[in-house]
Length: 316
Image (tube, rainbow, N blue to C red):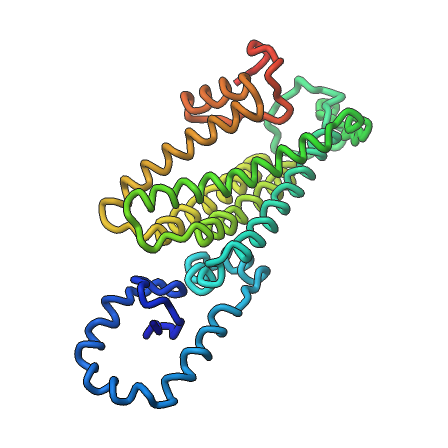
């Protein structure tokens, strides 16, 4: 069955086009009913035969431009999704884009962690002095003096395999949990168009702004803490918006059902993360995650936590 919208060949039993998701039954049935007496005698003509083999290779062999897609999603996310998601219907392309982004997230996160370990800025003079001044005086003895250090020896006991591996696994699980929750709930709401690989692509691409700003924020934070914090939160909110809107578009669920879809998906995501944190980081992480949810604010660094740490040592 040839899709009248994008000319992609589909099976005769298909209800929706595998490429553009057009409703084949609604689109084709009226045309067939009105044009049946005319098209049947012309069927043997050679003009219709070449159209099918030409359209199929064009749609199936088209390869996505990964770099352009990743840049485009930061500038025009919805336009980029509309133009490029049909190329990510298969596990190969979706897997490649997800692997690239998860690897990039892991590398940037590792760099940030390493810098945080070896870099320190200590106040060595007038540490307790704090006053507002509206003039400049280079000879002012009340000035606070800071000393910056890069102590690479602190990395001596850093477990690269464990920490980098855990970071990569958490990033990969983030993509899997978000896309899996929405795909599963979409199917539970009887969606006929939800595609797991397109949803994986949406989540992976949507994480790009958050990843970039999380890397830039500490650098800007060294100059101005407020600006660094704003940049970090802006990236997180932008990524959240891209992922949420993209997954809702891909769900194929309409009307009030979208509200219930998001509630059910959010519940699945929270439960999945709780299980993952308890499994990867032990009892201490589970307690920290519970407290984080109860407080509804703040951040908790779970790097390096293990089940043998005393709960009393954790500060919120």
